[in-house]
Length: 181
Image (tube, rainbow, N blue to C red):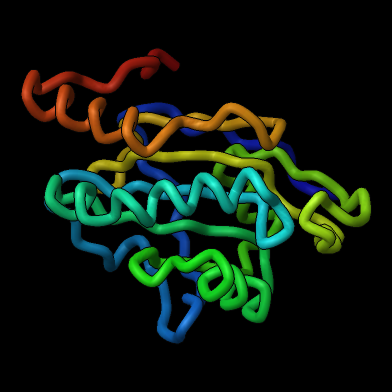
């Protein structure tokens, strides 16, 4: 049995997270440096066609995020082979892809967990358990600024909308919202 989902509130510290990276190396959120924000995009995995589209859009805007001082990392419960296959097959050379997220870690981030339902429209088997999508915009001090957590694979924040929001936040010194506990 998995632990219950945790709710992370804006202005509160986010959970620690250390995972391997596709292509080698390690993602350690606590050791990451960002001028403006860290953007963590939790995706369902290599089996998901909506994830392919979302990560492709992030790839296309990788330079725009970097210009704004935003580090971008995509994270899934995929294995090393599936993560590296996504990087190659989806043409994601500029995205940092972390893998081996456990369902327990996903719950710490407030993500929903799904059990396999077999093959997807891409013809790939779903993993036994995997997280549903989530997006977290995190300040350099590792406190949450914004989150979007979903129980379904559809209707995700678009890269262009995130860039516009980041511009607005920076220009207007806009504060986090939803922080009343």
